[in-house]
Image (cartoon, rainbow, N blue to C red; front, side, top):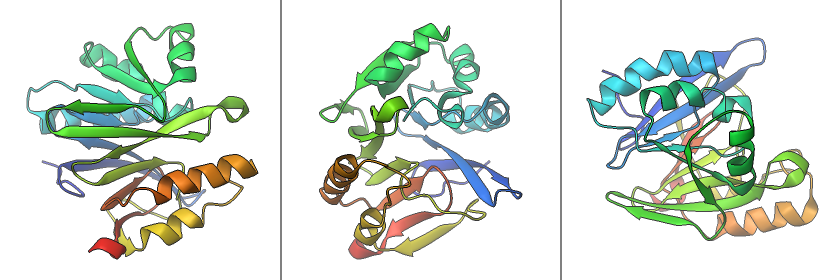
Length: 216
C-alpha cells in the first residue's frame, strides 16, 4: 500500500518532463476524509484505486476544489461516481459553475470565514484571487494536523514526486510574486492572510512539498 507523505496525508503525482513540472493531488485519510484536487480525468482514473485501498471501504467524505482549472477539478465526476455522497468544498464562483458544467454535487461554498469542524478535522479556508477575472478561489489549512494545501501558491519547478524539503514558511509565503497574483492589493492581502498561520507542512499543488523549519 502507498505510504503517507506526512501524517495521514497521501500524495498522488504526475511529473511532466518537457515542462519540468509536477502536478499533485492529496488524500487526507482522517475521519472525515478529504481529497485535495482531483487531477484531470486521466489522473483521477489512475489515483482512484489507490485511494480506495487506503480508505479500506470507508467513504471519501469531502473533495476540495481550489479553483476552476482542470488539474483541480477535471476528474471530479470519476470520484463522484464512486463516492456520490462526497461533499465538494469550493469557492462561491465554483459552486455556481459546477452545475453549469453538468456536475451534480453537494457543494460547500466557502470563503475566508469558513471553518469545517468535524471529527478529526478543523479545516479553515483562505481566499486568494485565482479564479477567472481574479475572483476569489480558496486554499485550505487543516488546523489539527497543521497541513496547508497551498494549491498554485508557493509552487516550484522540478520533479517533486515523493520529495519533502525543509525550509522556512514565512520566507516562502513572502516570496509569492505578481506572476501568481497579478494584482497588488490581492497579493498583499494574500501574504497577510498566510502570515497569520504557521503550518507544520505545506502540500503544494506543483513542485516540492516542505516542512516548516521555523517550528521544527
